[in-house]
Image (cartoon, rainbow, N blue to C red):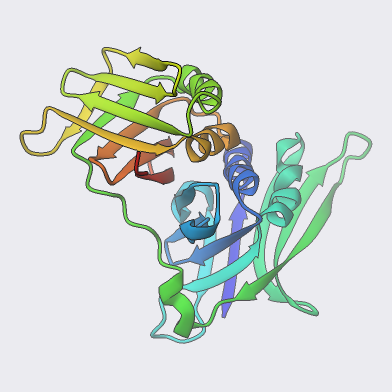
Length: 278
């Protein structure tokens, strides 16, 4: 079982760090699934015991890593599946936020315990030579017999999908509306309109976004709506550390809301907010 990856571009290193930092704000632990061409991170896969949403990131290896090698334990296995502290991984990668990082290696190895070693080559302002900054993040290797509990989630089949050019206003709005109502209703329609509705005993607050880009329409549906836990919605938006501002919202009527941020073409951050009964 082997894994090794190398990042060299400073922008890509900061993006990778921001993705992990987002996950670290949402959950104590995360699952890392390493494939031959793609890497996935998943947090909060068990939705029965958490107030945070299900979130996962899918990263095409060729986007960030000019060198990427994964060898599973057996030839018939396609993945390496690891569990680790998302906070520990986030702290290990925090060095990538600073300037002067020439490259960063990720390596699965066993020292006294299995770990992902984060090895950053950093050029200090007081020296002309780079030095290595190493953090060893302990991991648990998930055996293949347990992989069924750690499957990359599937994107729901949404009836309507809209794209918001900026999520800053929506993020601020949801942060305020979570104090008005325990649930939020999202309504979208064929005309490119999104309504976010918070209802309490005293009032109903409706916020409307118009002239949005219609990304997809399933069948002859002209509108779709779904009510979700306001705390889970707020947790997702409040945790975001990525610089990208465009958000795609897909609604599977009365079942779930799918939120998607394309950090770049094959680097995508997803969240699913399940429907709640009102």
